[in-house]
Length: 531
Image 1 (cartoon, rainbow, N blue to C red):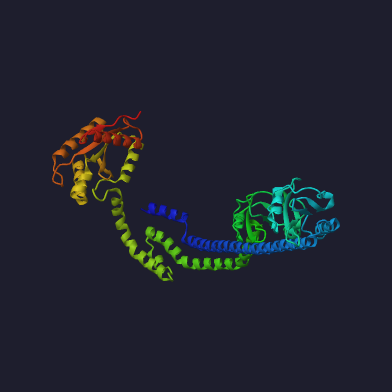
Image 2: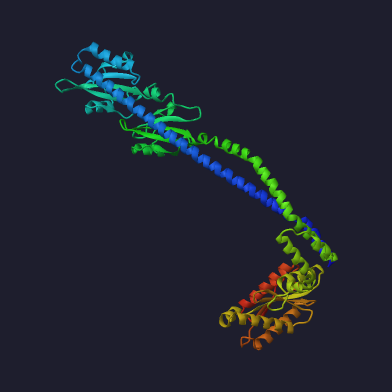
């Protein structure tokens, strides 16, 4: 007993102490609290910065859209004013040339300006080096402008010179109301144009940018000129613009980058202006904000942990003494040290009192507990753990033995018919019959449920078969507690003839039992040797 207690004492020192456990829990609680706080702060700041960036870009896009709308409106008014100058004077070549040159040179809106008659003949054009004068308007969009006979803004289209352009047009009418032609101002989308005047100073070095799309989702302005003319109508923001909506949302651009976009619809031209910032850039400062917050809190956190560890040490100290004295007291009966321990708080005092009363009772119970740990509480047969220990001992000592794996036939029917209480009585009866039908050296073990194992030392497989067969015959003729006989099926195996390992031995005995069941029950089957 003393050696066992000493062994337990050595193991105690190897285990985690209560003090270290409490300290670990305190530190873990602090770390989890800090992590939770930092995570919440991180997520909160991300959400705040994201919302701020979305709102900023929304307002920004709205203002730019207003600027574009005002610029277009002013451009149409310039064309309207110029139209009024040349109406009824289309035959005055000097006048109309002065008008187109003035509009093209003084206004930054148009790359070129033409005046055409109702047949589409360009009778004046600027710049003069483009050689527009004397040519006919041939594009579908240009012809449609002549046909419209009203102020118009075209969608982007390609000219005969392969330029992608947008044209603003104002009709010319004589004083008697007859249609004379029109004055057109054209914007070359792939060259310097009025968009750059309005939007060109609004780029950032952090990846933010502005672009403009028409009502069909075609890019008509972008800082990357290669994207002008691209169809991006599948973009979620562009879809909203095509529906005439304005707002802000997160979107993935054509390059797969998450952007925080603000967008605004231009009523006059049915275009849309988009201002967007990479999400990663918008929330880039969150990490620094959270880290600065953590650094500010760190001294207080460290102080709190130190105080908590000191308090934990004070709380645990009486328990440490009780734990140490408990081992010594059991071994040497030094109860005086236990009584002198200063248990200064309620829980430690209760433990101390309980230990004093428990030591006297402890030894008287050890043997009882050991007995109970080896037997099945219902039937009194050895339990599965004891079975495994005995098999290990016998095989390690190379003792020859046989095993009989037994199972009551149709035991579930007994439980279903008579109830589980009667089933328990039948199991007790079955164990009693097994013990009476075997030798004193034989061991009866409960393997599980209604399945049992008989261990027969120094017994051949043939002898084991005869014992099993005798038990089977006796059982089928004896009335059980349920008022009628019960039957068994059994499988027999032998060590080392059938198998040299206990796991294989039990598996083969179980297989033989299964064969007996499948062959009609109420019979004994011998296991085949493991090859």
